[in-house]
Image (cartoon, rainbow, N blue to C red; front, side, top):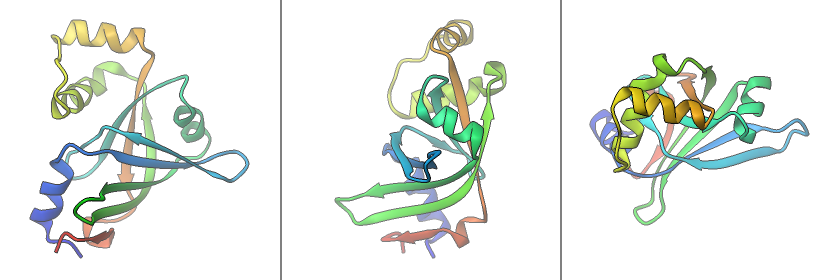
Length: 140
C-alpha cells in the first residue's frame, strides 16, 4: 500500500492515465489520457465521437493505470465511469486538466465555446474502493 502523501504527489505529476474499457466483443480498449485526480475521483476529457464515449455509455466498468516506466512506479485502480455531458458542471475540471498539462486556458466563456465545438464530455471515474485498496508499486 502506498503512503497517502506519495500517492497524491504521484497523481499530481504530468503523466498519462491509461483508461481501459470493454469493447462489445469483450476485448479491452486502452487509451492514454491526461487527467486530474481530486482525491476522490479521476477526471478525463474526451469527445463524443471517441470509442471511449460509446464504450462507457454501454458499460461503465473501467480500469486505470498511471505508470512511470523509468522509475518503476505505478498505480492501478478499478472503478465506474459517470459521463458528464453538462459542460458548465465540468468546466472547472476541464480547466484543471489543461492547466496541469501546461495548456493555455481561456476565460470560461471561450473555454466552454471550444469544448462545445469539440463535442467534449467528461469521464468522471469513481474508484471502487479507497486508495488503500488500489494496486501500487514503487510508491512506498
